[in-house]
Image 1: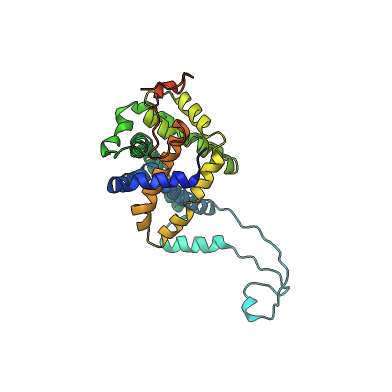
Image 2: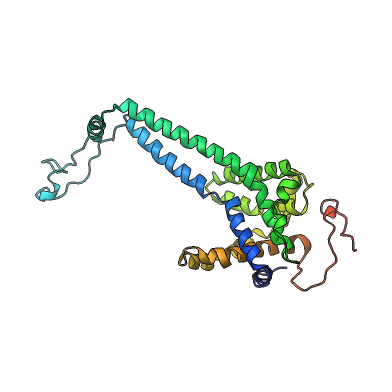
Length: 300
């Protein structure tokens, strides 16, 4: 059974002995798995959609609120003589603003729809680029950190996802992201659980390029069975480091926390896949083809 202390110690040791390459790969990996741009585009499109709905002529319902002190001069513009909230027609202000700009409501709505369409197209292009360009790069980065546990890995590992079973890697990682996103629609928590269940898929692809999509999902699920909560707690143990990184404008994350975390994640995969092999312990090599045949590993 693994524990966080030993796992993090192994991760720290492995990235320190190949420091600068580990830092570079951590930066590349952050780009490969980053989704901030998609969230940003979604936020903008949501805001513009809200403006568009306002331009379409939706009216605000009148509400009666409890009376306040109507003798207050500051409330004269808000309440009528009866102390009831005086509704305000914001559509009139909108028409005045559009009139001053020399455009009609319909023209403004057409511009908003065009902007939303452009954002949607950009989002689709970004998604396609992520799937076909960056997803296989994640496989190579995970392979680098996994190999770096036992020897000083080289940057030549990074194209591994492109050179070996490229289309299979693309399809598997796309479905992983899709399934997590769909599960996240169910009040977020199921999506978090599934993200931990599928967490080992990139490492499995990195070590076994000929594996099928079904086998990759099944094997990741098997590895993470009864380990999802412990992996979640492992991630929580890095929160302090990432908060501290914020005070250094991200420099600490680039030069220490990022490679430290990624190396620890690789150590977690190694422990779950190949047994509790801490650094310096001699173990017989593992035959990766024995993973799905039920046969014991061959000793060399």
